[in-house]
Amino acid sequence: MTQALAARMRIDDPDWHLTDEVEDVYAELRRDSPMFWYEPAQCWLVMKYADIKHASANPGIYSSAGGIHIRANLQPERDAVQLAGAQSIIRVDPPRHHELRRLVSRAFTPRLVRTFEDSISRIADEALDDVDPGEVNDFVDKVAVPIPMYVIADLLGVPREDRHLFKVWSDAMVRLADVRDADELAEIGRSTEQMVSYFRDMLAQRRVEPRNDLVTGLAEAEVSGLTLSEDDIVMLARTILVAGNETTRNLISGGVVALAQHPDERRRLIDHPDLMANAVEELLRWTTPVRVMGRTVTEATELGGQQLKAGEYVILVYPSANRDEDVWERPTTLDVGRTFDSMHLAFGYGQHACLGASLARMEARILFTKLLDRFPDFEIPAPPERLSSVLINGVVSLPFRARP
Ligand code: HEM
Image (cartoon, rainbow, N blue to C red):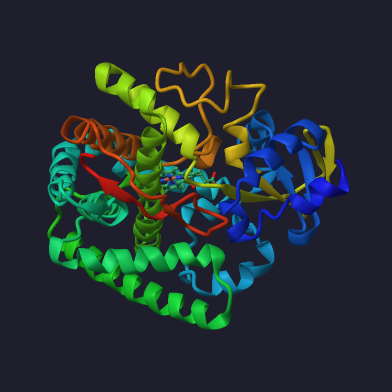
């Protein structure tokens, strides 16, 4: 590990992720220093697929309770905007996590997700109808933002007229990962309070008048006599809003950028629509919308040949796992027909693996199918503006022309 390479690593700097250097630095670390102590943020960076999988599969040793963001030192301030009495499922360890997850899985079933297929299709059609074929459109604004936002609103049971509130709340929550000062944190706190009180009112209504939505399902979920409290449900609704929105948005916009940059793969997908399910997995691997998740080591252990001490913080670097040469053939080639003997880690792995994976996959499959059907010759006439964030691999705006 040369000093020069260490100096090039700035994983906790949001702007560093916009540079061309990232993939090279990750590749060199995988080769020379797959467990890398990153002094500025006082954490281990876990670069290899197998090691990330191992840590994710052992939540007793790799705890989520101490925080999941890269700068763990800011965690106390971030926790101040959390909800008293409940913790997001993503930050809960077993055995409580196991209980929560079983209860949520009672409500958030594949069957419930399937009932939203028509509604997703309609939402995607409406978004694509909004694209002006003769003009340069902002694809993020017109398509990638509204689809996941409205899908989650529908899933939770939020009426159309309140949907604009979702964007404000979701954006505030995502900024929490990159928050820079106390004023910004206070503003995010206010937005959170508004959201929490909205969901409390909604839950009270659903208890009186059940519907086919997730809030009703969570209110009714029961496993071995256990149920979810009001705080649990409000927190879950909030987590789902945050976790399902920005992530799916950037799979969609990042996927469009990838297909624009790889015209042969786009053509292959148009000619072989049966490859779509595969293509969605490849686009997940390629874009890896969530960059990092953190864990706190609870006891002395070994990972990737490195001794770790209790209390140390590790960061799982998903984009590195998704380019790991030991797992992927031609890892830096986009291949929509790739077969997945090993699953990518874009949705994480193990007990905390993404709860909304099937919903996100369905949204992407429906949208990309319709997009290539309606606008097969789309082009990106100017470079996209990318999001400066340590957490999300995102696109802020994406010029899109339906036909050159
Ligand atoms: C492309 C879209 C998505 C990506 C890339 C993504 C990524 C992830 C990742 C990496 C984790 C693991 C966190 C960890 O191990 O600490 C996770 C967890 C989670 N995701 Fe997603 N997600 C996506 C979409 C969604 C959607 C649509 C929903 C809900 C509607 C959702 C809800 C959740 C929840 C609730 C968890 C926490 C699960 C737990 O802690 O047990 N996600 N997601």
